[in-house]
Image (tube, rainbow, N blue to C red; front, side):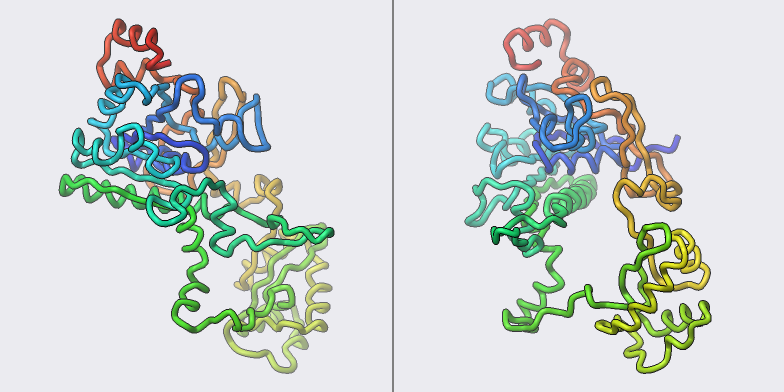
Length: 400
């Protein structure tokens, strides 16, 4: 039978907020991710974020899907012993909190590898396990701000403000880098028996997204006095244009041969008169007359008609969407992996699955669990505890 890509990979996760994405990526591909939460309190990702259903945050519904939850008090000696029992037969531990959070409970990497030498321990945090900002309390926008990806806008009153186009790159990229590192380390551990400690900072991930400019700065090709590149707001052959149905198309004929094909196919070779600029990277910036002509042309057809035309004549471009328009897009319908399940609290859900396409099934990707929903199941099936011991643990408040 065709199994998911990560079938058989067991992961123990102790995380809150965005670092939950590391476990999500692994669970999406079939890993068994056991989420350890504090009894009673749990991971407060359940209740943060402005979009909710049934009182549950969509951050929780997305980031914790496909996982099993055990409510386990790691502050107790017995809770720590149960955690060690879980780690013995796992391949990965994910720590997604402040730096050194598990080590403060006596459950850091050095202790865990005593019971599992081949263990891969991945710590995902804001500013990493080392450096002067290690203990700085932070949330998502901090990493993009640090990396130069979220420069302040100004309000009408002159206050600096978080930019409206902010996209939380550090946390998203941090989850992906951590998942990539985990899979690389598991590959080595399975081959050699040698575990690994991975330190992934969301701030570092955001900086990596600035690497194109940062490399040039560090190599001396850019300085603070270097004039900024021309704004794409003035580009013409690489620009947004309104269509007849009130939508927008992105036109990308920056290479000369594409612009020639476009104009020829439309019977508007008059637009080719004059200097066409360089073959590559030519945006015709500032050519207001050409921009007006193109605006009038694009206003004659619908967005989909222009997409069909660009496909037919092989000229670059794409539809421009609001998020709410994506479910109607034919390419989205053809490509998107939609996960549907009936959440016991939130009700019917349709969530976007993994963008990774493979000739193997994705993970079961069940609904995000409530805190401790699978406690008894995990204690019985993974650790072999009997009913009497489970009852005693519950009575002591060690598990819930």
